[in-house]
Length: 444
Image (cartoon, rainbow, N blue to C red; front, side, top):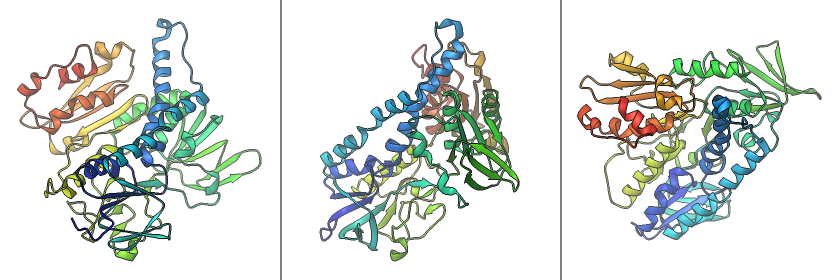
């Protein structure tokens, strides 16, 4: 690579779209710089996936304890403040560890906010110019905020994850990943929860028959869903916060979570200065993750892509750019099967061809009521169901599962889907027994 720049490759942002590939890239001898204005690691380790799944562990155990009933002497309940403190113990060391991973590999970390000056130069905090032959935009997503009166009274997902005390009545605006996962947590921890949804569905990207069962279970547990609602304002009347919706409706509450989605984090980046194309869905890239400015690339959730905006996709994109910048490959990106999961209780996980797509294409869908399978009866799971999609030659090409162990079951089946294993090949994969992997392979 060229030597008349400060770096061969400069990344803006330090999330999974960066660090999974930047560290091994630097280890090959390529000169790598990384600019970050916040915590090293970005959203997922610090205020997303890692924090969420740590809080959810107590939810999972509380649910399981309740199901086991008299098998246990005492039903565990959630100490929310202790749960949040435990979460912090888990995530606090992560930025230091990721910093060491990058620096030990030879990357240089620059703290501050980057803004493009030209296609090879960014200015950090308006003071220092940094140059690079190639620049990667990996700034991720940020919370969307409703543009309504009183929007400052609402909170975002990071605020929820840091709640030292759980409000008595929590109102969530939005029925996506964040809204449904946090509704599950707050409900199990003892809060009254109301979910307000603009349309008539939640978790629209997941198999709706499973989603409806999860919603029905939450309703039995006391969660209220308000559908087809247009939220118009938030107000503090001195006694309560009020959510105004549908012209003449209002809901008193103690705390409001704006979970109306996440949008590309591009504020102040100066893309207009260099002519990089983007829209509300993200930065436009080609099959090489290049923008329309050839030496500027993008990676992770910030890009406009048909792939789901989840950590596995960002990880793969980061690894792909490592291979490209190190000269190991000049091929276009070829995505593997990217699985997705929502961590409600039960979870819904899916990979490959969806049930809906299979029905449109006339592919056979096998259904299994897992609640009747002995391994799922160990912890008395009442909601456990799997649907598998096969092609005309019998290859497993998709799976969707609803269960407390759905993410592990789908993980176990990914090789069969990705590599289009024949039934004979699948039959030669015998998992550890007893385990969820064995159960998953047994029905594949």
